[in-house]
Amino acid sequence: MLLEINNLHKSYGNGVNRVEILKGISFDVKKGEFVVLLGPSGSGKSTLLNIIGGIDTPDEGYISIDGHKTGDMKDKALTAYRRDHLGYIFQMYNLIPNLTVKENIEVGAYLSKNPLELDELIDTLGLTEHKNKLPNQLSGGQQQRTAIGRAIIKNPDVLLCDEPTGALDYNTSKEILKLIEDVNQKYGNTVIMVTHNDAIKNMSDRVIKLKDGSIRKNYINDNKISAAELEW
Ligand SMILES: Nc1ncnc2c1ncn2[C@@H]1O[C@H](COP(=O)(O)OP(=O)(O)OP(=O)(O)O)[C@@H](O)[C@H]1O
Ligand SMILES: [Mg+2]
Image (tube, rainbow, N blue to C red; front, side):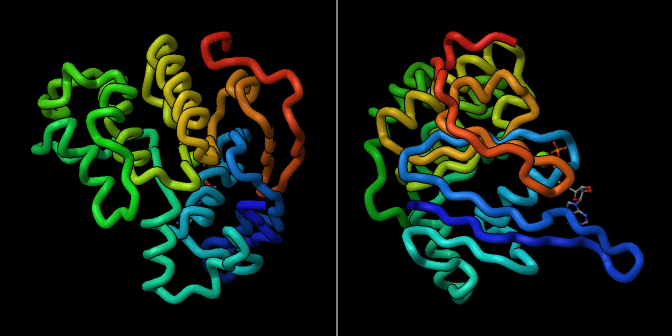
């Protein structure tokens, strides 16, 4: 098992304002698995992803990656865990405005031990003819492809995606989903993707549904289809 998520609890606020956001979340993720995490707004999806990503910490429970509990790690080890094992793709692309496409992607390889070959990755991303442009010269889809490149260049074990198509139109969304699918298949990275969009579960290996901070469903998708076949 690559990732073990065990009995995570998380609350925000103090005293009477304290609200429990995650109420004992447990699930396992296998290496190379494509997991889609579904749930309504406010159900705790981003909170969960941030805890898996080591950006936030749980009040109770643990995450273990390859048998190492992240909660046992000191700050330095946690930074190394994030750097060596995780890639993060957000809804908003967060590119550095005064760097080109190529340079923005290169940033992601910083301190990485075995980065992917930059020009080959740019080609896979379909960005070769745009590689010397600045973010404000790109469409939303091209910006998101650049952000995917930045997350993937260090060839992370786990790619965490929080609504990666939330800001994109239908066709561009499908193109980005196809790219994440290609990356998962070509490089074998494990993917955990958060979305509101129920149709996206059809391209996953495993579906996890959250509601009010608890898991309502966790099942293997036996009828996996390609991103290109998705419709909504
Ligand atoms: N730092 C914080 N402090 C206080 N409350 C927070 C904090 N972060 C999240 N919350 C609350 O936790 C709940 C879950 O938030 P979260 O962002 O995980 O939801 P989500 O499922 O990702 O929703 P969405 O689909 O809208 O992105 C929300 O009610 C939110 O207001
Ligand atoms: Mg969210």
